[in-house]
Image 1 (cartoon, rainbow, N blue to C red):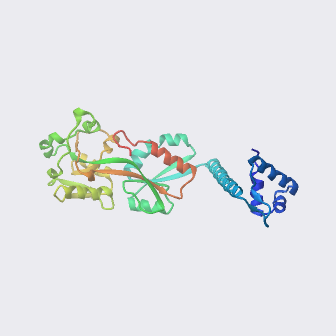
Image 2 (tube, one colour):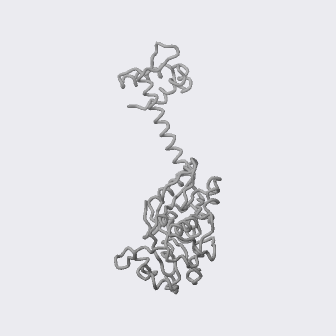
Image 3 (cartoon, rainbow, N blue to C red):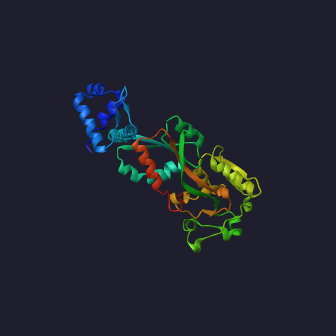
Length: 320
């Protein structure tokens, strides 16, 4: 069928053949003949010419509804292609922990950068509360964290899940007593293999050991206290730290034990100075969420979202 929708829509808007013809810079007889042609093809009238001003028939109302749907799709397509053409030296800001910004995201997003060389990625470290404020203020495009920001202005989905384990200096005497539960560095990385598998350790065995904990305003800090409380003790905290990587390296130096995400050993140099223990507590498992403003709907934002949905952060992570 020949496309005459703009003519019919103009008549609908103007409620007059003569006014529509003037608006379209065509003659009224030609416009009337054109509409008649469309109605003959459809075998049903679109306009009731007995009313003043001219009105739509039931078929005409349906026709206009479909025209408006088509127009909306065409406008969205045009807007999408305009945005894609205008993408040039775009900078996307992603907020997360120091661990993600340093070890995970640069490697993970290498393929995305290759697909979109005009995009520059900027990583911002900080606390979840501080980064969430920046996300809401438009200073960040995305937030990757274990905590899920609330609010109708933020869109969130679980990107991955991870496990919290215990890292202990290898020379601590308690490791001898807990040998059936103990993982070496290599054993932890290969824990899915039957010969390297160890049962979770009862956490109460560590009630007298010095703990290195993250400071408050951190999900792992709260989980650490809950894990210890569920095991029947309050941890003996020798030092509070801002970064999990700092806590890990202090464990390597024998300064205390700490709760650690299982992915850290995948990104650091293997060492015989640390051993690891799995924990049997629901608090030892958590989701990692990708959050972004509902107003961020440009093509490049959507491309990054779809890319992240399809990417796994590490071989020992569990995708949701």
